[in-house]
Image (cartoon, rainbow, N blue to C red):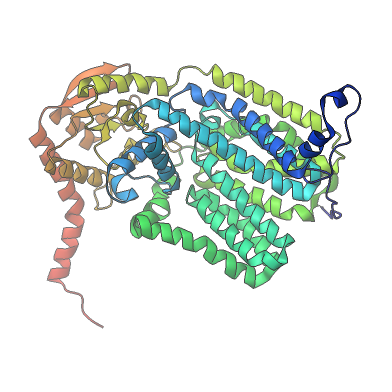
Length: 561
């Protein structure tokens, strides 16, 4: 069932006429001139932005109570430090399956304020709050153009809903937080092109660039091209597509050329098949999906119920087709790889709160305070939960990092290996990763959202991470350095050294046990020459296929047709 939506007149909203003159007691305290100034459109936006900053700060105050909330933050901080201390391209000195934009943002912040103390992370937290506010402003502008004065409610629903996840998902300065302003800007620019035909082409070009920047923050943001391309085709036909596609592609290609074309496309796009297909059991996938989606939906229950009620009552409005396409694309992005981590669901929040604002507007705004009150109540519950969240692995990592720092020497920074899924120990201890591959997930093939029972056998090819790690160790030894410490943080996981022969050989033969911290064990190098032989053997194994192929080509040279 599809319903048509009558043309909406601009409501008083942010650009509407001033409120009526105050009367009674209030008039005694407010001059007429002050009232006129305070009720201009500019003053209205000022009030809205201040309100957004207050709500965003309150709902994300717990972010400042922990060093790191999840491994992604530790990963980004470790990457940023490497980018600031080494010369070279991103995927050559530090590797990630994500695009390079956010690691460079972290690196630029650290370059400005320093990264010698954990207090510098406060700046990152404050920046994340500012990014939330920018996202809320863009959402408000989209909703205001469609639903008049109710647009502000969309921004408030977003800020309250963004706190409605498990604390490690809602309070972290994550990839999703930093990609959302770009996705919202892309949609807003495409929508503006429809309203301003004379400026449609540059606006659509800007929309394509915004999607590219979102994709350079996290790959799944590329699905925002669905509503943007649909809007371009509907309004400008081929001219719109010819504008928007190059605007999307060229920035990505430019960044790829900047950081290394082959490395970029391998790690961001073509080299992720193992991670995406490491799914685990169907029951594990469904449990993670329903658990995290249930939390997300519960936090924004009022918005979900409003959308469902109006859709069941009136069907889908044609005017909202691009919003529904945005929501569908976001759902595809959340589902990619079928890992369903909680923070993934943030991508769906902007179209949901805008659609909910539309439902509020068409229902005569009778339930606006109920919707906001319910969402504020759930946000308060999650805020309380975040402040009382129990001890996490992050606190354990801090204890391990202190021991690593003691063994390495206070103020001394040296290459170490952390064999685990959380690289926070590198940053907390002030030590240098001995390899560009800073998690056991890369080196063993284990995926946090995948099979939790076993890992695939290690492969030895020129592109395999274990060969890359061995080469990194050889390069360190050529410079007179080597990984003095091996930190085994794999307790209970299928990638434990005892279950992976090549790592078991490394630890048992060339390192000696130094100290344990709970279930984490610190080993110290005892045989540097043996370590060199171990690394060289792995590199030779990795190059064996290449050598065999070259020898075969020499014996049987290809013939020209």
